[in-house]
Amino acid sequence: MAKIQPLPASSSPPSSTDDCQSLQLRGEQVYTVWMKSLVFSGNGCTVYGADGRVAFRVDNYGCRGGRDVFFMDGAGKTLIRIQRKSFGMFRRWEACRYFAGGEETRPWFRVQKARSGGAGAAVTMNGCGRTYSIDGCSSKSEYKISGAGGEVVAAIGRKQTASGVVLGEDVLTLTVGPEVDHLLVLGMVVVCGLMNRCM
Image (cartoon, rainbow, N blue to C red; front, side):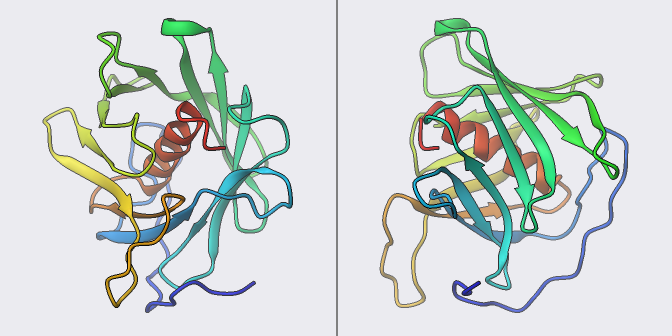
């Protein structure tokens, strides 16, 4: 698999089985998100790590905005299952995590668009009441994710090359701050892609 702009590799994250604990804590990290599937004629996205290798992917073989989407690691192991629930203004997405052995947990988090018709969405963690907001999620290439206190924990924008050339709307840079679960943030990015029918 070809690399995209290789950077120095980062250390491997620790893990935990507590749904409300951060599962992949580490310092600020930058991912490249390409809103294209690795599968010919498929819908999905591919996430590249700091070393330029495929870190995560979504391959949706059905139509765009499918009701059931699987977020996988680079080897194809399912990490998150995202399901679209309900329709219209009450539409929401629920995500369940998979742990070692392939066991699916109870719903991990859910995302619902702002009812006021704005560009935001609310994210609620199951079981612990922790919340996040996605500001500007109706944009395909510029939005941020904030914690309950308003602190920005992740931001996504158009990717630029080292020489300053801005790439297409389907090539994005995701910056995830320290002390936040990277897998959780990546799951939210996939939901935003589903909301915007990018995959």
